[in-house]
Amino acid sequence: MTKHISLPLTEAAIADLKAGDSVLLSGTILTGRDAAHKRLYELIEKGEPLPVDIRGELIYYVGPAPAKPGYTVGPAGPTSSYRMDKYTPALLDRGLKGMIGKGARSREVIDAMVRNRCVYFAAIGGAAALIAKSIKAEEILCYEDLGTEAVRRYTVEEFPCIVAIDSQGNNVYESEPLKYRS
Amino acid sequence: MDYRVIDAAEITAAVKKLFIDCNYFIGGDILCALQRARENEPSPVGRSVLTQIIENDRLAAEEEIPLCQDTGMAVLFVSYGDKVCVDGDFEKAVNEGVRQAYRDGYLRKSVVSDPVFDRLNTRDNTPAIIHTQIVSGDTIAITAGGKGFGSENMSAIKMLTPSYGAEGVKQFVRDTVFAAGPNPCPPIVVGVGIGGTFERAAQLAKKATFRPIDTENDDPRYAAMERELLAEINKMGFGPAGLGGGTTALGVNIETAPTHIAGMPVAVNICCHAARHASITI
Image (cartoon, rainbow over all chains, first blue to last red):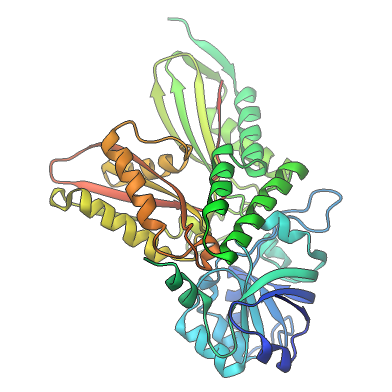
């Protein structure tokens, strides 16, 4: 069964999301990947304000391809999440409610997720053309100089993903492969 | 001695087409393997993921857009005939083709100038990685691919020594794929380079990922090792997108070269299911 989730995520919605759930997200999300995370993290380290309010938001780890004429966005699939692990606990402690990416997370990230009641969604890596169909609008919020790595706000409708790690720390990347390992 | 003259502009046009084509159109070998995997995949989530990947690849081809946003770093294997003379600068011509493909084909520019300090995007996806081999003949053959880094980052090389034998090679391949787990966008293509020197093994591994997965190594012993490794990897359980299942890899390709009496280098280059490459002979 697929859950339809409206963004921003409420505490109740987060509590209801269980690892393995298929979900369709509708609302707005932020984007950011390696270089933007490094900058945000350095600002936090210095105790300076962030150029974008991350409280209550989801960050999608993506660096989209350019949009062809006639398209709102170019192909925009998830990038590997572990590269953001170093920076993620600090963002979660500052009010970020979740991430969309692909692949495993560190113990530190999962602990910070449980501590702050957050959720990590997996989108399908390499399904970028298909995923872009659910992105209806985009706006660059900051770090435009980073090109594809700029922080954007996407408006999404029925953006498909799976709850990979829930707010209790249950983790499909740990549990599911074991069922098929021989 | 007679040389065949090829205009540098022809090289540029060919390279441009290769990079646009490989980013829009997935190879028939990969598509067949994905469809076969979907039929055999025991996990319902895995089947759903494979269905979405197949639909994605169909959509990209139909709309002529990149199938993955990571359109990769440009890698080319060039067999340069010794009876050919390029009228102009060959490397410049190749890089100009890459520049035009990534600009006009709406491909993502993913290359930074300096790896450690500056990390400034070069904004045209150059420079390309060009492996050139001089061969006899009057043609230039190019196999090119955009290499995504989600999977590239999961690759590894090890300087094994002769006593490790075939079992040591297989163990290192399995260990590398296991450590990569869900990260490199499974189902993956595994390129293995064995022999040569440190850098030759890595180059062979990359070359192996560019070989269609419906082919096998000419040496039956390595062909058997390819099949054996594929079966073992698919028992690891990572499955499509790493969400569990029986399809962790679509293919294992091994390429080998003579090596030193003291050595047995093994490189494992991992490629995601968007294993993009295209070839042309000029």
